[in-house]
Image (cartoon, rainbow over all chains, first blue to last red; front, side, top):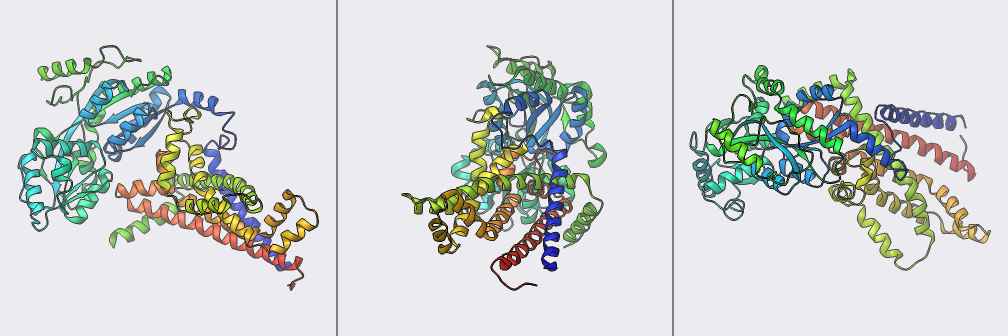
Length: 349
Length: 242
């Protein structure tokens, strides 16, 4: 009998301990009546949350390099708002924004961005930084593509890869991200049809379907080549057996832009706050911060702000980078505005 | 090998020093999965009881569907709930996407088939004579469900524990509904996925150890409860006393 009481007691203690841990978690986590009674409260919850938080869908490179971690507290303090950052590939981030699930979109795929803007999902596209894509690979460079143009380098990789030359592999992001879309641009400039001539061309071409960090690790493990944005590469470099092989070429330009997500359900105050974030990124002080970010740790800046250098690119790819974001609804002629400003940007350069 | 050793050392440090970030992530994981499990149990036990006791057309098919859903991929549930909770989805106005509450809902949907199915099996395992006796003594349907559930409580408890294990260890729903937002919806599994991707193995190993420790606590608690209950059961049935 006593033994049973004993066992029961220990069991009860365990359960209690467990519950205490849980509630310790709850108190910090605002346990707003989870799922049990969502019918009565959510309307209120949604509106109060609307004025306090801003959901940012970002490309992985800005998050994995910890640039956003660095900028987040500065913005939050300035505007008394809570930033919720979800880091996804550019393709997925755009999808989230199109469905109205994000308030700000932060990506690096100009052609996809222009389609997004044209369809009326976004306002106030501003480019705020750039850097370069780099083809990285093993130091002994088995394909011998060092310092070729990106197009020639990729063509050589494809020819040697399909020939089964020893050690020639290429890991592609394969996830619809901005980097993946940049890779496809290089293939098309080199004269290949991506889906028919590259994707199914053999075991040398590996589609990772993962984020940039994981793709770099995979390439490093396999001794393969891959295309990466410079920032993520520099941030991860110490863990990798990869060196830059090709880093010059017009098609390797990587432009980061920010835009306010627009849809008719989006409350005006949220659009206003999203505009604040857009303006924050092109603000001279933030531009300066971006320009120095990473210098202490990596010996060079991970991102080049527009205030330092405005890259030359296909018309429209570099968006406006100086006019404050004010629009809270799409203007009738909004689609033409970024193109003209970019043209002036290119001419001033 | 070096990476594993340094990772484990770093993990040990993070745990011993009670790193606030690690603790917050662990607490949030337990909160979300426990809430989902409790809510799922509240739905599944009566539901399983009804399915077990009622005779209706398609009962066998329904059971097979439930059993198929045991192994529904977490990302499929994640996708489904995402489409429902998205601002442009039918339940978008609740604003549950990227919140812990949304994750609880997603995990509930994920584990309800497991708890319901296992509750049905647990009830089927109860001696047929008991329910026959109950009915012959004039018990209502509700009364007999309550009695049989009591008889099967051990098996039901292990079903609930199993469901909790699935909830706390899944990544798909947590990633798609939660969005892995730091300090808001980042739980153990999504944090491990992120940190591993960023090459921070120590942090990942620390979180992995915590995940296993939580599982251990639950298993121990369940074993104690089970042995407590079963010895009590023996006494009721006139079994040996200690």
